[in-house]
Length: 325
Image (cartoon, rainbow, N blue to C red):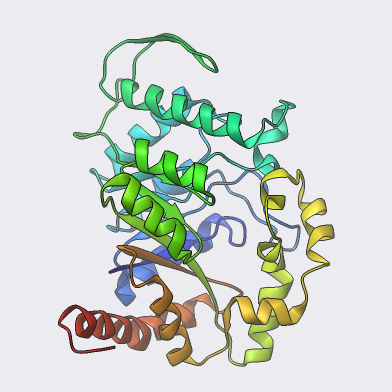
């Protein structure tokens, strides 16, 4: 299992994200993932940098590979512009860049005033967008007149030596089957064994990555407070995260999420053994990216490097060698 560090663009500004990347590499994390939003989930998070600027800067401060988890290449940014941004990022990172894509949320994608499509149409748009991007990465001139996108005489000149892989997000059976069919891999934020098995079966065993959150703080109560203040929105059920259109609406919905629900959703506090055990549910994933919640990211990264990463790797090695764990 590759253990990476997740950069939350909604919670931290650009300078802090770059600092975290440097600290994560020094601590022994093996890769980076980064979110791509126009808005944060709520005003308390307070940030939302343009991810492509941050990815460019990351190439100059870190040698770790980077994956977007995830970019929506269908509404806010067209597949043509997304393809150019991803190609430049892959060139800057000398091949160490991977494009994670998904069908998006109204929170970020409604800003041009476009009607927010149904889930079925969004997946249809995503499939067409992925096809357009891969054609553009050949370096050939592309003309495309599809159901959702028109591309006229477009060619990307700045390209990496090899096109970036595309990992596709899926949070339900339809999206997971699409990820298996068109993606080079799978992205999720849950340890849903049923969906992972579906992806493995449909894809023939392609790799899967997951992201998790860790609320590290000197005390459990402080950590729960940060997690509930900043990320109670992640406790909203069903399709709400895809259809709510503003941070204010997410804040209203999150009033239904109790502090106890937040406490149960994340490992909160300084207990490093509990943080290490959180990886057990993700043992079947090829890569797991962990994000800090709250202001104590430097201490979290250091302590994870000293104790959590070695413990998880030891457990994985014992399991692989048949020694238990």
